[in-house]
Every structure is written in structure tokens, then in C-alpha cells.
Length: 219
Image 1 (spheres, rainbow, N blue to C red):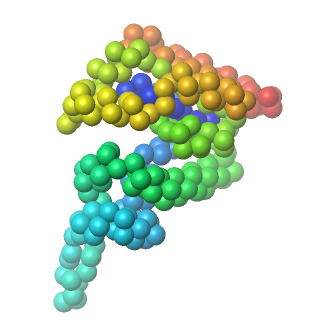
Image 2: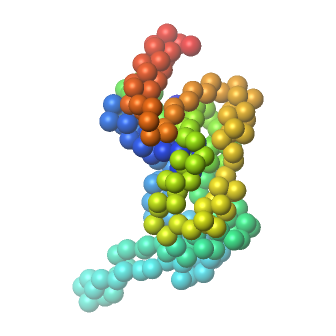
């Protein structure tokens, strides 16, 4: 198992997509969390208790003369507005969602490696160190980009403001601290530079070749 991490705007998803295009399965923690928050009964129940019933929208359909709920959709904007300023509620969310995402990843990993015979799998995780998920891994890839490039990418996102960007970046671990924390935990860390100029695909292909050789020779 290999983790892909990096600060917001570094281009983790772009790098992950290239790995997938070259035959390496990548588990996206953000996508998994979104799915679980709309489907896991325990999470839905606790979210409504913590954030209020209105945090979900419901679609109803008439079936055999009865109104039946056919879709439960989390109001992600409302949720984001709450946890952006309320640290306690953010911690409550993380305590519910992170373990569920980890379990989903481990189940997915088992299928990919033991049933589909992939040599290794990857996980894209923006909060690898702050969530303590890094303790599951021996290997990690840190995606890096210059700070100004990252800021430019972040500001291009819909609805982004300077204040919001600064707050998001302030809440995330600094990439240098992430690197040191991973190294201190004896995790082998590689880097992929995604500054918009250095070729990313060649770095990905070299990384794949390196890990295939490592795992084939058991080191």
C-alpha cells in the first residue's frame, strides 16, 4: 500500500489519475467520504444529530400509492460552512468518517491485491498525517508544487476567496512538516513535482517501475 499526499493545490488528483491511466488502482478518500456520508446509516444518523435534520435533503417518489424516500443527499455547502468555523464539530465529523473510510479502503485493498492480483495499490489522502492514517503505510508519495502555483490553482476553484484559501491552508499540515513526520515514522517517502513544467508522467512511470522492482524483490 502506497499513500499519495500533499498540500491543497499541489495536484494530488492529477497525479493519481496518471497512476490509474498506467494500470495502478488508486483509492480516493474524498470520494469515499462523500459516498459514505450519503449512504452509511450510522453516519447519516449521527450527522443529523450533530448538525440538524436540515443537513440532508430528501427526494421522495410515490411507489404503490406511498411516498418513499429514494435519495438522501448531504448539503455539503451547509456542512462546510459549519465545520469551517466550528473546530469541535469538525472533530466530531472526523471521528465518524475517518474510521469508516479506513475500513472501506482496507476492504478495497484486499480485493485489489488478493482477488485481482495487482502488485500494489495506492490511496490519495490529503490529510494523511493529521488523521494519523500514515501509520498504516510503509511507503508514501508526496506531491509538491511551489507555493505560488498552489495558490493560483486554489483561487481558480469555484467560490474560492482569499480569506477561505488562507484559512484552508492554515488548517492543513505544512508539506515540509508532513515530510518530516513521515520520515520520523520510518516511512519511505518519494516525491513527485507538479509545478506545471516538469513532466509528471515520466515521474509516475519511474515511480511505478521502482515499486514493482521493490515488491518483486521484497525490499
